[in-house]
Image 1 (cartoon, rainbow, N blue to C red):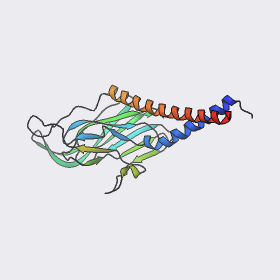
Image 2 (image 1 turned 90 degrees about the vertical axis):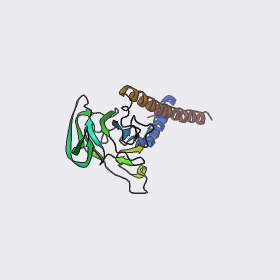
Image 3 (image 1 turned 30 degrees about the vertical axis):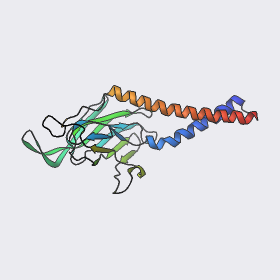
Image 4 (image 1 turned 180 degrees about the horizontal axis):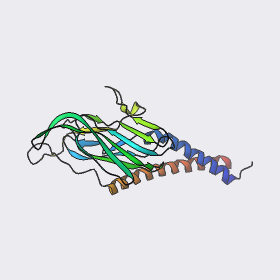
Length: 230
């Protein structure tokens, strides 16, 4: 079949665009917390972004393991999803004069399905340990209509987490930026940015990626046209 010049240009630019998006896909495939860092000893909301399925299969379940030291966990209920918690022994801590020895060790959202091409934020509210400099890992098992992904790998000492194929979401604990009323570290910080704000940031990020892809596609197309004119 003989293609017109316009069709040949379209096929060339489309192929370039697919190659560019394929190159960026691995960076977008992980499950990451939002925010990436929280103040030591703070109580805050932590969202886990899921923006992909298992290959082409939609997500139907997210099981989140709570690391040691994270306490007072309460999950957010999402429309179209059921949520349940699993409780078990935890490192004892004091709360309102009582010693707490059991708490949430796992949160499971089931429902959806979450189709390919959109994202959801699976959110918990919790208190993190007062350990500046520590990194907490939240292993996640993502189940889909077909297949599953186990985001459970934790880097060994000296290993870069970016080198792992299926890294567990990592949350950095940083020193408190301000002092609380009692002179100690601020015990409670504001929730993670509102969902609307998150959506704005997400939109900007995806638009930037799209603009970069389009720019690359146009550049390849222009080069192809220039070569043909010669």
